[in-house]
Length: 307
Image (cartoon, rainbow, N blue to C red; front, side):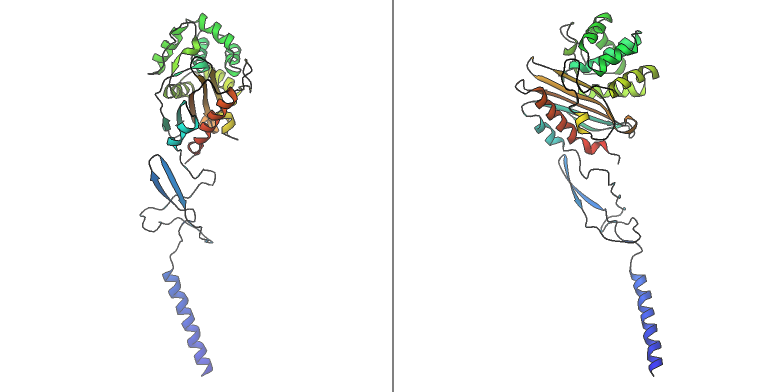
């Protein structure tokens, strides 16, 4: 009797194990599955509680017909809060653009067509004109890397002044870029964030190799202090951490506002074009205004991570 009962007991256990195997799904929910609830321009990211599994594999979340995407541990679990961006520059104006050159699309656009004084960002157009006219690369590189105003003034005068702006605006398709009202004040050229992003796209994807190499070497080798002693690592350099960057910064004061702009590229292979333009009260200092630009670029960091 004891042996027979043992046999039946063993058989029962085996049948129970088989039934359990049939009832348990072959995979568990992805431990990194997330639900996103959007409200206006800001998104709230809700992370599910992790579920341990020895062999995790994607599966549909409850009520979902498609499997969730596994989280990239290097990607911030947030979106760019465009509504909060303006608050980072109190009593002033801020515009921003991020363009992803791999995805070939603009991923952030905030007041991108608002007009600003260019300050030194117009030196990008001066550089294109000067190199086309045969100016030595070293001269152009110094103008850009230390933001040398004296060189910019010489090249501006030598190559036609306002004509430089109108010529390149037409060639690149810059709808919001205008030469200065005073022909001698190249820093008063009018620009938009959308147009500056177009300049970088043109520079990286359309100009000849020699011109591109000369300009990009200058931008990647930008010095911490400009030729006038102003620290020019605000914005992109201070904000992006270990990401490689190349920059052209702009600053000017005080004809009604303190102007600080940060523009350039960041990421591997110059993937992201980043432009932040600001007009701030003249009561701010350059260091204080620079910190605001840095905070604005930091707010864009979620857009500087591959999907």
